[in-house]
Length: 68
Image (cartoon, rainbow, N blue to C red):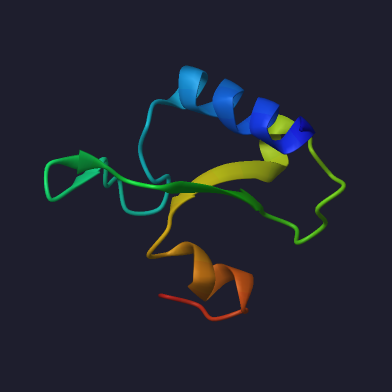
């Protein structure tokens, strides 16, 4: 799947961490990372439009809530 490719590539380049909060582990285990499209367009897969978010933060962005 293309999104898995992008996710693996971003983890390799940016590290296994949430790009919003910096979290890398939860209870001594690696966190689950979700691939997020910054502009909301899931067909726009350019690197600048992709970010890795923890499974705890991703729903806030996916459903349109702002944490700040």
